[in-house]
Length: 113
Image (tube, rainbow, N blue to C red):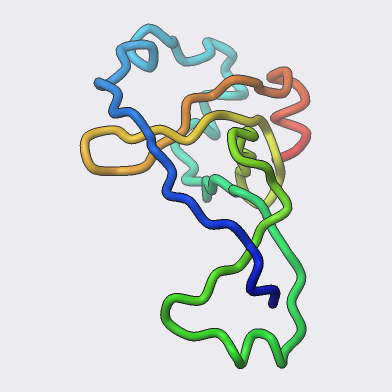
């Protein structure tokens, strides 16, 4: 782990709740209706890195792990382990969220799941 890594806090602006989700209508296709209530795991990935076991064992409170993404780069939107889009990290009330900026086409998203 290098000691010459620059660290700076990220300033994220707070957003109000979006009404866009309410405008989105569920698909009317009968085949899709059968799966609409199935829960899926959604994750937002800021980036990744590879560490050796020795480096992991040396981690402690206050340690910093540098990721492979630049500041301002979009985060990946991952559903059930498959990337389906990208977006910007935002703050909603006191929670982190993601503003989706890019999605795979619906057909590609279904294939990815």
